[in-house]
Image (cartoon, rainbow, N blue to C red; front, side, top):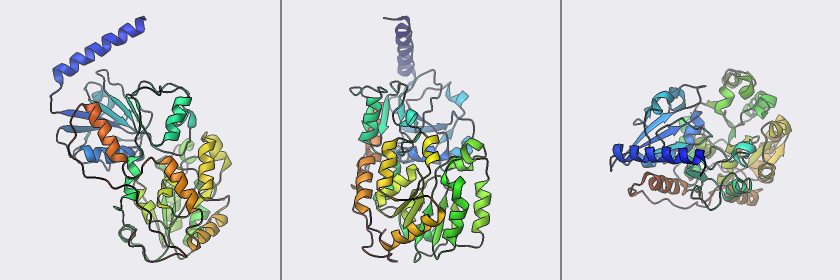
Amino acid sequence: MSLRDTAWRFVDGARAIDVALTRRSDARSVLVDSRTAMNYVMAAPVQAALARDPRIRFYATSTDAALSLEDIYRDALPATTLIRPAAAALMRFDAYLTSDLLWARLPRGTRRIQMFHGVSGKYSHDYDSPTSSMRRWHRLFFVNQRRMQNFINADAIDAASEAPRLVGMPKVDCLVDGSLKRNDILGGLGMDPAKPTILYAPTWSAASSLNIMGIDLIGGLLRRDWNVIVKLHDRSRDPRPFYSGGIDWVGHIKTVMAGRSGHLVNDANICPYLAAADAMISDHSSAAFEYLLLDRPLVRIHVPELLKSSNSNEEYVRLLADASESVETAPAAIDAVERGLASPRARSGSRRSVADDLFYRAGTATSRAVHEVYELLELDPVALPAVAARPEPALPTAAFNHSRDAL
């Protein structure tokens, strides 16, 4: 046995003694670590389900100092205790939950769970076919079999270990369980539900469609008799050039939208706006893939420089192209939306096929994630309500249909 292995055995033994001396049989603590508010959205459904159990207490931190904890966790459950990394390092947590490659320094040890925060295949060397080992994680909640196999093929994890678990994406369960109502969402935004609603949700990057044609595209959409919703990635609001190109996109978009039927949403969670949209425009984003679960028209803006700079996995680029109409200019995107609204079932087969490939058993992921967390916490789970499997989407069979209450 090497000196390093001997040292780790000593550390593990000391941590086991710490647990034995300090753990109450009926109490557990979980630390959530998020880089942005959008990262927290991934963990939020799991926390919400577990928070009904009085034995589990939640803390939240961020090992990325770019944003304040208050900004990141503005939508956190009231019982969540915000804690700085230095204070967290002095505490012992029974589990650590994150959706990014964050690794808080916790000398007293914990059970580390990786949930991932997207499904687009960007930054593939980190998030899809990693070049470094991921064997230090106790659990990896894979969204789909494809990514799990990519990790195995890259020798980042051992196929026979207990860590990889096929869970799905808890965040998108709400897109298929009937809990989001289109008309209610639009009413809350002050928009007319009788009008077609178009969502523009570009990814972040100085090379994104937002930077190349975003203002022209938004202006063109607003000139049509449509509701227009714009959802920016958190990082597009970051003034640093690497993320946003150093541009105040919020200010620019608000100026373009002034006095028109448009809404720039501030929420971190895009799911309600996906549910409200009759068609979506994006570039290469996880949100575009998530929209496929609704089987509605998707327009993809092809930006080669974005795909190159974000090291996007070519598998995922092809999948999104197959399930959408690809364009390269703002006028072409608007024309494609017109065609999508007129023929909403075009490409339906491709959309459903890609969604089934990338989102394992959508609608039931939260239940699986909660079960896995209970196992790591060594607690008997409390009873949770049954979750229905993914239903068939309710879509019009011909041109746009104003009667969408069922959605």
